[in-house]
Length: 88
Image (cartoon, rainbow, N blue to C red):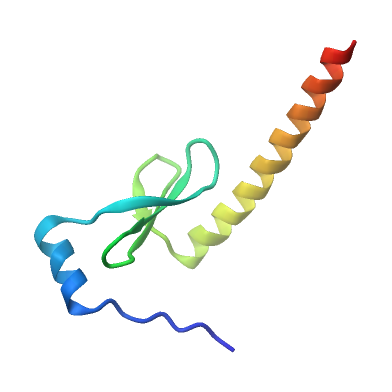
């Protein structure tokens, strides 16, 4: 069963056209890479390799998922290493 994304209604879309988007961090991928979502029209953005905001496409979602896994494993490994070195 596929998820269908509902299109934003006209009022939130019009609000964003008049006042601009109100982005909030929806997911922290790493310390520098985050995913953002507009509160009103639900538009999703992420930071690219240059640090600029780009639209969150399926390609960027996959990249962010992989990057998140790498970041989590690296931080876990560093915590174990620092814990082991503090014992000696």
